[in-house]
Image (cartoon, rainbow, N blue to C red; front, side):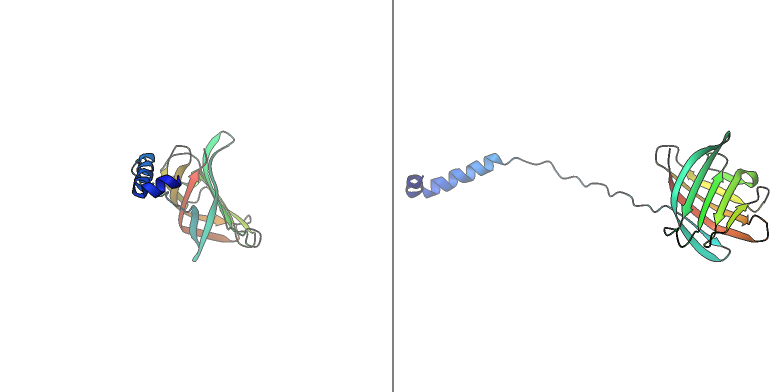
Length: 169
């Protein structure tokens, strides 16, 4: 080896360069990877005039007796100190407007008082604007719901409501 370097250093460097170039191979062109869409899943509304935003715990289709419902369930991340939650169920699984007896809602305020809607209340409306009927499909909609406590002595209006979730199949 020393003899080759002594006699022909330029030849040695040329052979080494040739070996490196031969061992290299062309790589495929790089293709950009799509950036995954980051979506936040939420239920937001105004409790009378106070804005409230809940994280979606689940969105699902479920059977209540023989009735197929679509449900979205939201809670605050810290549900130990603040018990606010909302579950909205509609009797069906289509993107359309639901009213009156087609809506079943249950609301719990920050101190744990529970409220529910009256099925014959004409103010209640839930409009599902998007419902993808596939695995991990998107569920989106808007709502206005009036809820009352058990004795009907306190009423709260949940208005300007919006929700966005992934529906479990």
